[in-house]
Length: 437
Image (cartoon, rainbow, N blue to C red; front, top):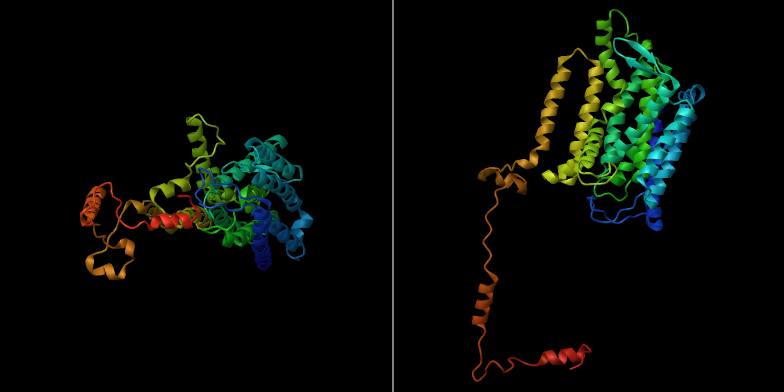
């Protein structure tokens, strides 16, 4: 655990320290696109934050390679090199997109090629664990297609949720924290060496997000852009592929006894095996709803709009910060709820706590619909927004105010409508200003 924490801290420190210079570089190169109709920020903000995150990834892998307890991951597995190769390719495409706005089909093709690069180097799904059946081996083509599909879906899910300051980095960090605990439990508790790469990937991904968040919280000084969102989406997908398709469930000794008993015993174990997908339930729901919404309107599924979940929270009445915190809350509830259920599946307290927290989350979602007001005697100790507002006086009509003003102006005797009233200093002011009389 100490080596993993050291790797996490180094990754976070490198990402944090490089984000400032990267911001200056983005401003100097003009990577500050104009505000679009779907954007919620009001001032042009530089992108290219993914550059700092990618170098944080490189620093984390370099440090882990020189640590005694983590060096075996690089010696016994080719997955770290496969991850770095795919990450470098998708990061390069993201940098070009942040600068030149590439076509959506080009980015989709780059995502598939990046996944293919990882598959070619061994980071692929070899089998699928099915409760009650056991381990089902996949053919090479089946494993390749499933791996590419998982990578593309995860990348786009993270990219879709990157719409508010600090939202994507925070949600991925929360999700990865729960996934890291489960992967470490498999590696250390069950002594499954095949879970070590996924544990390392999760620790590095947490460091990347934690190092970038201080610069990206509202109001954001820099955006991660597609170079960052596609990068962290690919790493999250690689972690899921490593622990789901490479760890043999038979080593957990859960397929013993009758089929019914094996299915019951395997259920809480298989939930965290696909934890990167369950913790992305909110972004993936947003992705599916966006595709259905745009297709229903006759638009392209890749067309941008303001119908995402975070946009809906702002329309309801939530502030920018509150909308982000609500999304954090639901991500943590899904991720750590699945993790807790996998550890104590027979405890009803877990289900009860998750139910209560879900009810609290629903209340938070509907909070702007209510306008609570404190009683008169408590107004002195509550924030101003909970005090009763006094009705404002109705403004007088403009023509009535103008008539009263005219009545107040005294008219000297002997003057009529064709006579100029008052001194003629305004003409001298014009001449001083350089105008011709």
